[in-house]
Image (cartoon, rainbow, N blue to C red; front, side, top):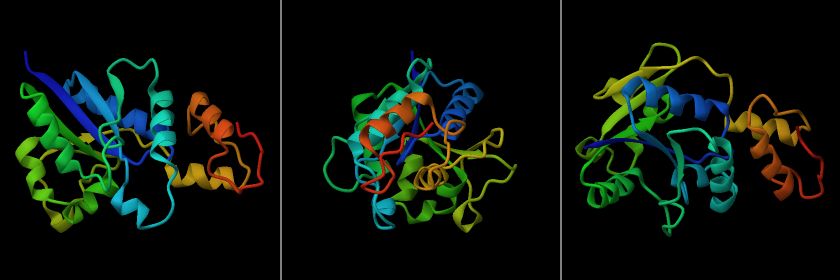
Length: 201
């Protein structure tokens, strides 16, 4: 029987409740068997904008964020690859290793806007169905071009940049990330100044 697998790629720096809500909504809306939150090993777009936490830390936080949630797993394929990681290469590998699996590439609205800047972006449709997660009823695609599926989700007011900013400012993040993720952030002293040892809740 063909498995329906969603690939939700991201930096997850850190993973927050919005990521989990989006993954679950797409899973249920499209009847997917599994959604993999694929952690980017060396996210070429993000690293050009500034520092990101290590792939190992981001992978562990992602695993913690979805622990115990049926149908969601954290993917380490791109973490184990060296150099910049590209979605199309992940899809090609999955197509070879899981030929009986139907693939769905899940992207958020921000990623959809910049899709045409992705490496070999036009080939993504050869290996998967593109799924754009939308919070406001629009499907923002670069060049106003959309060939895929749109899934509406509730508007979750959370972003990784907000989480990082709140931590740097000594503010609570308990409504934005899972307690298990906060535990890792505290233990590894992530997203803060070198001498800042404050425990965040």
